[in-house]
Length: 360
Ligand SMILES: C[S@@+](CC[C@H](N)C(=O)[O-])C[C@H]1O[C@@H](n2cnc3c(N)ncnc32)[C@H](O)[C@@H]1O
Image (cartoon, rainbow, N blue to C red):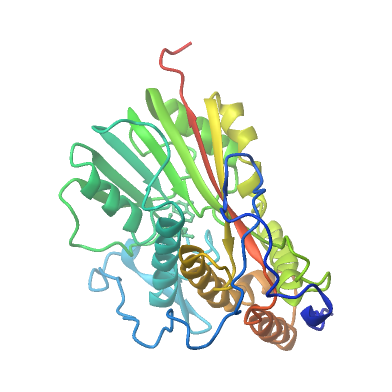
């Protein structure tokens, strides 16, 4: 029914080692404009970011707890959440947890360690993290803001047991009709939730209602869409073709894969004011000249490569692709992602808006 295209030949495009103008990767508009400068020498396998020594220890916990909310379901060798099974089409096993923590490291690199942009002051009281995952963001926020009570909510019981005393985790669906996540928050935060949230308008309205006046909502999201500024990505790029298919699959499952770039409307529609957006370009792979972007690029390339089999699982099944077709797409995409002559990047969006300080 569907087969992947042949990988584009980047050698027919502009040289990958061409130095392009502009060094930074941050813009404050809604689409990045600065061009990422590529490494002149190209990428070498002996690069300083060789991964052999990485610690692959898992951050998972709670496996001995027997309540059904803490149970998991296994499919095709991967583990999924059992509570509200099927709600989130992505595994919750060690591979996925490590991938999420690596994405966190990537974001810390590109933001210079800034956990959020919302100006909530130095002594916030209440911070909520919806879809907290391994809880890595919530834990770091709790460490940094000891005055704050931090709550992480997730469908999966994958958060560690040893945490700062001011962080707590609950297992729940953050899109429940009835909001069970408390109120008077200084900050409601979400990150990497575009493959999770079915009704962003409703969620923004619920967050607005349960923030304190003057509180902020911040939604950080990677736009899973390959871009290129220097002509090295061919029109028939195999990685792009795979993600076009992925976007169709996630749309079929009820999610908007382009939500990252479209969050102004749900935020403003819910009543948030002073809505701001920072966009950062992150190279896919260690091809940039800038060292921080090279490291961030390596993290992103690894995260995408490990996500390809996930997309080739349930999401592509939802499009009716056969096992052989899904395997062909997976293999072609992974191969394409290794080619550092192609200067792909993703935009990462940081949206934040304020509930007016006085209601009404
Ligand atoms: C891509 S991960 C992001 C994790 C975390 N926000 C981070 O950036 O490290 C998405 C997380 O959202 C959780 N999730 C998905 N749908 C959810 C829902 N309706 N309610 C609560 N959590 C949800 C998943 O279980 C998963 O842990």
